[in-house]
Image (cartoon, rainbow, N blue to C red; front, side):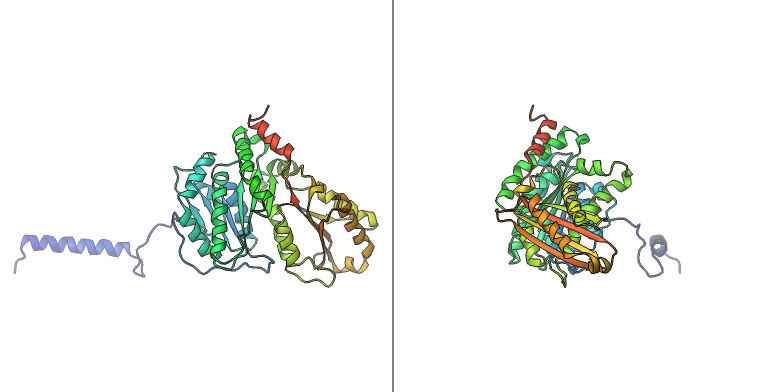
Length: 400
């Protein structure tokens, strides 16, 4: 029987299609697709909220906005925090982050904000529902405090932060929680140009009323110029990793310590919460090398307060809260006189001008398996230095 030519043509096409499909399938019958890094442009998939990979006093939800904020938030993720996500207007700014792709949200824009805060503000306003969904899927209802990480000098970060603060507060309220929202932001180096300084000045102008009214707390200010001066010879690849690792490392250590018990005296969760709600915080950390004399530890404490990776120029005598926490190995605790520690706390009170002004002062002493004596300080209730604000305004051409 002869096939009609049209039937013959149909069979020939059908056989070719089947052959092509077989060539496109793997042994499992799944089409082989190129491996691409997909970054979400909308609500991330519903997933089980992951707990932090460590015991901490406060369950923080971390949001990084903009490139600098994203890098800081990513450092929290690398430290074992899991309620973390980042947002940006440009996928290129996600390069190098260890966060999984479904913890990254790209807000609609024309390829970034170009250091224009109004574009960052527009982007967040057009992405409110997506951001709320990310909070739901990343934080769930098991979150106590949200910390927003950003740069004051950029466009996406500085522009999106005020609206992001509002969204974070609304989210916590919707979960029946206190609207505890804090802020960790960086100030620009001198070399970053007038626009970054102008953005930073206006950013501070916007958030200062929120700080004074305790609508946001804690507020942690890091100064890129101070960081640069402390690490001038660190390589370009390692500079921000080292700086962010140090800043986040101190924050992380204090959050861990406040969850621990001590046979000596404890800096507990209630103490930690009190300081977290005191406004602007200044952290310090010191490895105390000398402790043969009573004055050695007091000297280390003074240097701890004077040398910090965080912003300079704060008047610590305006502080309302403070904590001094010692962590020492077994051998040191067995030999170190208690009077040495007592003298250090007296020195802390004196340096802060705490006599007769009602300063909330907390103490802690813990044992560690790491050999050495370590001192951590937290100073709270500070104000942004007017001199640094004026410096920003001058660099921006806003003040002669």
